[in-house]
Image (cartoon, rainbow, N blue to C red; front, side, top):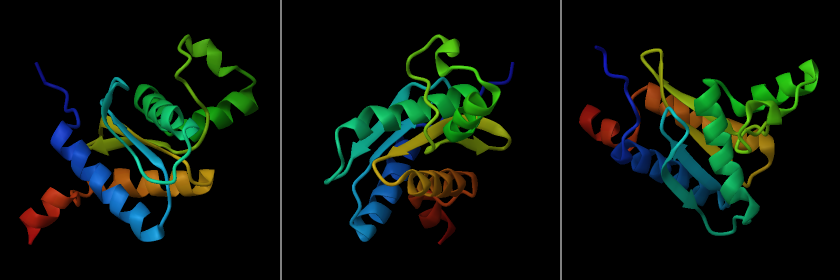
Length: 147
């Protein structure tokens, strides 16, 4: 029986560190959540200057992206254009805000990242960048291995 891949705590912490370094260099405050493929929290960071509402928003964005195997903002757009409420999913953690992105390796969703606290377009861009860095094998541990 094939065993599904999941993002591990080491990889999640490395990804959080990479995102935190970028936030620090931009002097921006945000919350960053990494979840497993089921949407359950693996790692979390709230940087200095980040509002409290961003905590749950980041976690919920990541949850939505993992559960739906797609970006949280895309689900929100479908909800608006197709006229169905997100409450139809039966879990109050579903959100349609952009900034939740699945982490895909080898065609398989191994987890998701949610970022909140920046303007929504910046949340989306940073989350996509972070998820792509895992897929490309450029998390900090992988960068050291390749050097």
